[in-house]
Amino acid sequence: MINPEKENQAGRKNLSPEILRILDNSRLSYQEMQPGQIITVYAEDALTKKESSFSLTVLSNLNLEEEVEKNVIFQYAEGDFNFYKGDNLQKTLKIKPGSLLGGGVSANFIPKPNLTMVYTGGIEVGARDHSFENINGEDQFAITHRITKIEVHEAEPNFKAPDLKEYFRKIELIQSEKEKSSQDINKGVEKFIEKYFKENLQYGDIKKLLADFCPEGKIVMASFLKYAQEDGVFDKAWSVLEKYNKEHWQYDHPDIRGNLDLKESNRMVYEKMLKEAEIKWPRQDKKTDTSEEVDTSRILLPENKELQLKLQRKLKEYEARLQEPDASERKKIDSQNKIAVLKEVLKFKDVKTSELEKKFKKEAWFDQERFEAAIFVIADYIKTGGKNVSGGTGLN
Image 1: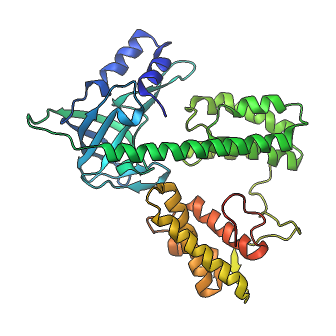
Image 2: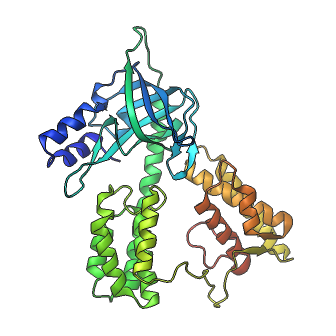
Image 3: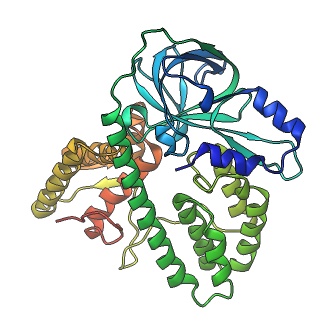
């Protein structure tokens, strides 16, 4: 996790005194906050795009040498405010009064030739964005854009913070799961690079460049190079990747670098890269070992009792995942999308995925990427028994 104070110092070291003065005069640092204070933040409402406000109660302010999620814990007090949903900025998120929020970081581009990005341990006026993390101990976070004003109201003399042990326990579980997931992804990407690029003259450079991307970003960039290899344009694609790494990716923090879901501009840049490298896009549907395409536009369930029983067992497995006490928000959303798709297939036996998407689009749990993944997984289970599905428990 990011330590705001360390990140702040690392980003500040080359800034001029004048820039530092501007930054420090427009920032309410975490060190200044005291338990019981009410912080009112004015920012852009994600739904109306107009200025609105929300209030937070400071519950704790622990030593900044500890993990970031234990630095400042807020309780959402009030405000009819729509946040940007952290893992999908195309959606909005409301937070219920009484919810617990971990203090995240503000980020801003500094007007220097190298466009240095500074991460600060506090809430900053004019910041490009600010995150509030681990809502109620879940793997979920909310984003605010264009903060224009911050007001601080002093704490009541008899203020007493609630016991936060359970909240911290949940955060530790989330962090443990995230670290394991990141390690698994990194190992998978390393094997992928070795398998497809070991004989490539750029092998060492590929490993070095991808090392600075977040796990999701590593997958994106490794796939980009694999697509280029398949299309016979690897050299051009490698030049394009080096170019955009210098012009765009290196200015993102390593925790989010290359993640196409967290920043709309990242997806736009990636599409530019594909076009400049002359990589065919979109790619063809994945194929089975017998070179048959897995059609994801329509899922047809055959009259095969054994297969249907296996899919029924798979549905129960997905439903059980939702009941796991320590299941992350990410895992729950993934399971909910798969449950919805599989229920429709088992019920109707023949579904058009475009119609299914329209049906589920407005559901709170709907996630475009996870919905598409669910469609592919269920279609592949029916077509091949899951030969193209990596990870998971398979179809038994």
